[in-house]
Amino acid sequence: MKFLIAVIIITITAIGLIYFFQSKGPDYFRIRAEEKKLADEIRRLRDENDDLKKQIYLLKTDPFYLEKYARDTFGLAASNEIIFKFDE
Image (cartoon, rainbow, N blue to C red; front, top):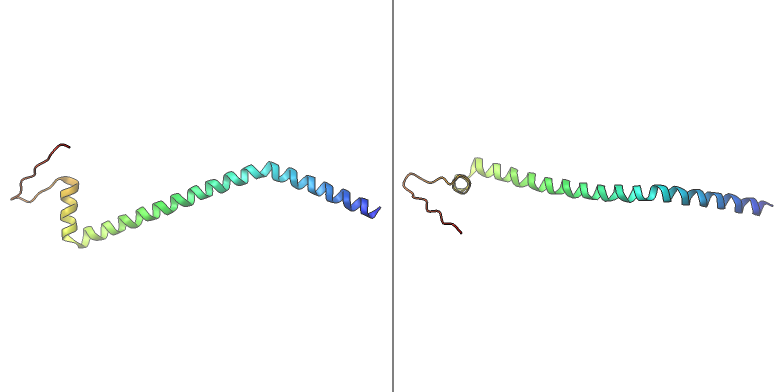
């Protein structure tokens, strides 16, 4: 009789666990995928932030970098220079 009760309890527990994981399993995997996507986005934003910090530092401290940035970004030139633009 004890064996039969143990089998019934194990069976009911197994059915309950199967039902629980079937109903919650897809949510778990969806949440894990979203977590991975967000972690990748955080990593990308941190890298971008580091690049911007480096650029700010160079703009503040390196006059050659500042000059190159002004030329490339705004098309600026020194007073004795002529800019030639070619269409590609």
